[in-house]
Length: 435
Ligand code: ATP
Ligand code: MG
Image (cartoon, rainbow, N blue to C red; front, top):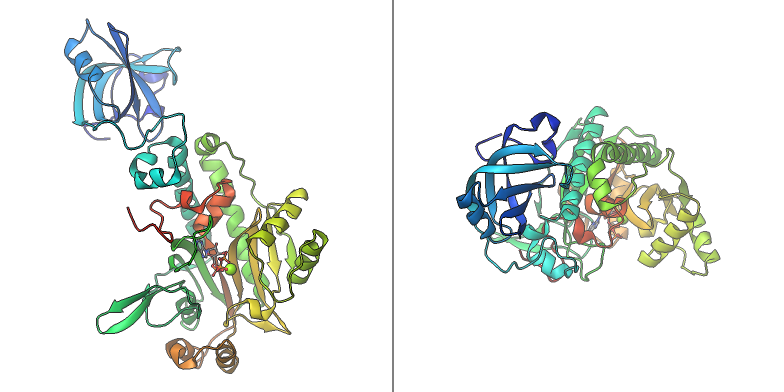
């Protein structure tokens, strides 16, 4: 494993008792009792104890006790089983390399009892990530993304990457970031929507993208980022939106099962329970959801989209029924983007919610050119702004649909976190552009 480390902390076992190993990491704590000192060394898996005796190795002893906390060291020594030590093994050092000395005091403590403010944590994210409960979120995120890839590939989806610098708005919203593209104006893509739809006319009839979304969200909320990531899919030759929903529920179930199986330590660190949804996930029609809200005393005009408070109440009602994941289907057409397939005054659309928060939106899309042009106009947009997109609907476009599943939102809801900023390494929000 390299010159600085032969084993991670959790890899030590009885078979190494009395053997020489090399470990490396950050000095989390130093306890000096005069003739003996205990150093707690941390690596990505956990911590281990280094026990050093003044008499035996005076030079190493002196160097270790004079280190600042969070310095980086590599220690070669003998591994000893010792049941009094936290993880059951200690290292008696024979060689020490100080790889990097830390300054003091630290801008953010790693093991402090008092909880630091979110801003202090994010300003010092590299240190924040040294905490096992913070690091665990990103270990789980890795499994989430990789299990999504596995699932989609097994189901015939091809991974694609579409442009993030674009000439016109994806969804016609106002929350776009504008930028200069040489002599022209351009935007950052809100989502891969128009491109993944265009690909449905290409013969690659099932695609997915692990995509960046750029959205100039005007206000700071606990569930909006200005730069977020999503698992976006589009699939052709569908019967209706039910085909898309069954991919989504299968995907989320698979992700939950993989996390449950592969992230046992992280789940324990975060003290959460991962419950994969039972399939089929309950479907609640928009009209039914309105009635459910009415019974709780919440009045909403027909046609309006649910706000965060309504979503929370619906989540509460479902929680009482023991359900974490549920679909809300058949939204009024005016509550959905122009490319959504209408059905009477409603639409062939759905949102997937988890514990009272929307985590995904999807639908069957319009594939008829004339209808699409009409819907663009009815939404107050100019068909000419969409000419490249519209062209793809003129020369053979199969029926299709898809969804976007927010990675940070899914992670936040699965892990019962209070703020979506916990789920992205370096968040961008209304006020934060650094680090
Ligand atoms: P919301 O109504 O919650 O603001 P939306 O309906 O505008 O979200 P969609 O366009 O449906 O969002 O995007 C698909 C998914 O992407 C959402 O369900 C959510 O999981 C995620 N998402 C969208 N916008 C953001 C954002 N600003 N920050 C984090 N995740 C987002
Ligand atoms: Mg949505």
